[in-house]
Structure formats: C-alpha cells, structure tokens
Length: 139
Length: 139
Length: 139
Length: 139
Image 1: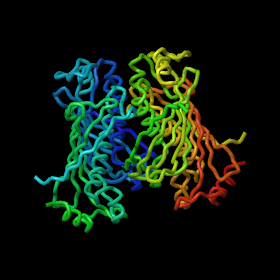
Image 2 (image 1 turned 30 degrees about the horizontal axis):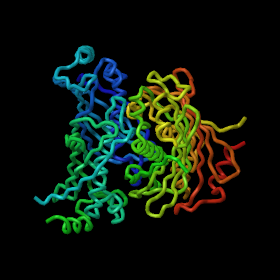
Image 3 (image 1 turned 180 degrees about the horizontal axis):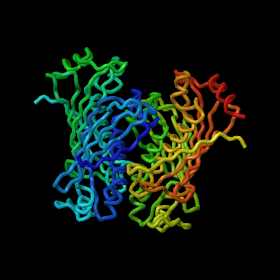
Image 4 (image 1 turned 90 degrees about the horizontal axis):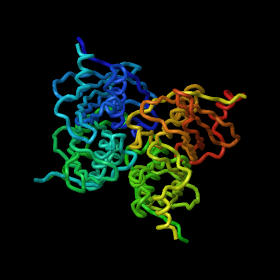
C-alpha cells in the first residue's frame, strides 16, 4: 500500500478539558489540524503557509468527526493523518486519534479542502503546485 | 410541520478570525454549541447543565460540518438549531448558520449526542428526564 | 467626568468552563477584547479592523488581569471598558467585568496597545488617524 | 541560586494566529499554562490535577503579560517557568518565552494562584500538601 501517512503526538492541555472532565469535543478539530500541519512538514508543500505562498488558500469545506472514547487531562494521543487520493481539485484527509497509553481509538474523522485564489475565487482545476506535489509523492 | 427550532445570534470575534481573514473553521463548533444551549433555554431541559443535574451527561459522538461561505471579523450570523426526532436514546440536531447582512448560508451541520450516567456508562435507553422532555415538547 | 466608556454583555459558553466548573482564566482575555471591540463600535475608529484599514496595527503589549470571583456556565456578565488618556502613542484601556445577576465584580484588568505600520515597525508618534480620533472624542 | 525552573517547548498552531499574521495575544495564557503543567511534571505535586486530588483548587488570581515580539505560524518557542518563593498561601510563577530559532524574548509574565477547598472557600494558610511540596523541593 502506498498511502501517505503522518503520525504526530498531542498532549491534552488543562484548558482543553470541559466541566465533564473530558476534552471538549471542539478541540479535536485542532488535533486534526495538528495532524494536517505535521503531514505538511513530512510531505512538504501542503501546509497552510506553503499553500498561501503559492498564491492559494485551501479552506476546509467538509469536516466529519466520530467520537469513540473521551480523552482526559494530561493524556497523550497520537494523531494519524492519511492522505486520501482524489482526481478532484481537493485535498482529502482521514484521521485517527489513539490514546498513547493503551492504543484505544478516541476519535476518527475526515476533512475536505478546496482551493481558492488569493481573492477567494474557487479553483475548479488543481493548481500547478498541487499537481506537482501529487507527482512527487503519489506512486 | 412541528419541528422544534431555535434561532440565536453570534457576532464574530477578532480572535476567531484566522490569518486568511476568515473565521477559523473550528469556531463553527462553538457556534453550533451556542445554538444547542440557546435551544435548551427555549425548550428547557436539554442544556448541558440541565442534563448534568439530572444525573447524566450527553457527549457529542458525531459531528458533521459543511462550510459554504466564509464569515469575517464583526459579521453577525444567525444559528438555526433544529431538533431531529429519533426513537433511539440520542439527541440529534441540525444546524444552519446564515449571515445576518444578506441571509447567505455560511455553514450547515448536524450533531448526535448519546447519554452516559455520571460514571460515563453509555445508556441504551432514554433516561426518564429525556422521555418526559419529549412528551412535553413533541406533538 | 468625561471618561469614554462602553458596556457590553457576554454570556458564558459551555466550552469556556474548565474542569473546576468555572470559566477558564484565559477566557477573560476574550471578554476584554469583546469590550474593546464594542468600545470601537461606540466610538468608531479604534476597532482592530478600523486601525488596519488606516494602515496600522495596534498589538497589545501589556495585559494585566485580576480575578475576583469565578463566573460559571450560562452566567451573564457586563464588560465595562474605559479609555484611559495618555499623551504617548498608545491606547490604554481599563476593564471591569461584573456578573449581571448580582453586580459582583468578577475581574478587572488593563491593557496597553502600541502602533506599528503594516510592516510591523513601531510608531513613536501617534498616527494621524488616532490624533483625529482623540480630537473628536476627548473633550 | 536555587530557583526551581522548567523549560518546555510549544509550536505555534495555525489556529493560534490571528488576521495580523501573528499569534493572538490571548494564546500566551495557554503557553504559560503549558509551562506550569510541565513544571508540575518535573516537580510533582503542583499540577492542576495533583492539587485537585489533594482536595484543593488553585485558581489563578493575578496574571500579567508583557509582549515583546510576535510569534508567527509554525514558530517554535521555549517557555521557561520559574517558581517564585513566597511565605503566603500562594503559588507564584514567572515566565519567559523565547523563540527557538534565535533566542529572542517574545513575552514575559507572571501569575499568582491561591488555594480554595473543594467548595471554593479561600484558604488563608498553605494546605499541608503544599507545605510538604515546599519542604521537598525548596533548599
């Protein structure tokens, strides 16, 4: 299998825990973003700032999260971010977050990003920089 | 149609806007939660703290967001939160966020919550307080 | 007395409450910012985006907070933001946050902002737009 | 000198950067908290959850931040957290945050925490667990 994957660690901050003593569900959006940024460091060219410097933006247009098990204060977790190939002018990722201590899956999710130019116009075709990124890293 | 709905307003904070000059996508999770809490004030009994005082918790287990149009700093938006009936021991909501200025839809989404007791045990049947809430407000 | 003041309301969000059942102390920085932005709507010209459109930025360089009493989930509070006159090229505010229910002071604070141009260069003299703002609103 | 110190690293997240392309000033409160929690791991007993398990809470009652230089997206920084001795029933810390790349100081600050029991009553004398922590680690 030739899927592009990245793994990165996050540690739960006190401020991320809600009054039910578990990580507030919105914080996982940040963990996914940590995963994406870490992916972008491993396979350079897909980080937010890389994309911006290529003259584009890549806003998230779809985000799905499934919560399986709560994380708690000071827990460490691994975010596994997998690039999902698509012919469309989109960037698709799947995520799996596991607690380090016992490997239990705490959340999974997926996101889709599209491309806009710097004025916010949707790009129907993949920008050249993205085509080149794909050529370099896929297969 | 007898759907239970709530509308509440949010105003975009400077700190919610990212370096692409639009609201960071994770902030919409907060807007949905604002919608849920406002719904809980209109149809009392489903706010986080109400549920907690009934001896239960209602963690979000599914969350989907579709982003349609970016909100920007100081924009005002209306969050419309609609209760979706289900026979399962779950609370399901659908959300629609529109920019006040022109009514354009900026995001839609849905969430599912389950019930646990105070030790975190999943409840397979709807707690009595929720059955009563349904009796009172549905039909 | 001719102090320029603004009052605005905030409602505590579930996500702002920490696992001690009180508002996490970092959230008050957002409430102060809400106060500043609301002040900028009442006395136009000092909001972040106004300043930015004048070709400047006004980063916060000093921030002090004194916490007096905890806010809890769903509490409503009033943020009172008072402009503090200074001859320096700075914007100084004082803040007082009171719980609506009983008027108890929950936090006080102050902030200082300086001016930079769009490349981040510190401005030693007040920009013209700020001099004019002062002429208009102070006495 | 026998000051107790901890150093820990933070990496700036995209979501922490505001529309001026710098880290939003409120995020430094989180960096300080990261410093405190990391300190609590090095000198066990002063983390939020340790204190809570001893039957107490230690709310922050004073927080001062001085901003010296902006951090930007993906910057790495070191938070240096120094315990400041006091005879009072308080926990005092000083913080210094430096950018890793060049060692430049980006922010300094200090915080004061007091003790309350689990019902929120202020403790005028240091709890036993804190006296013992001091005996163990100071001198």
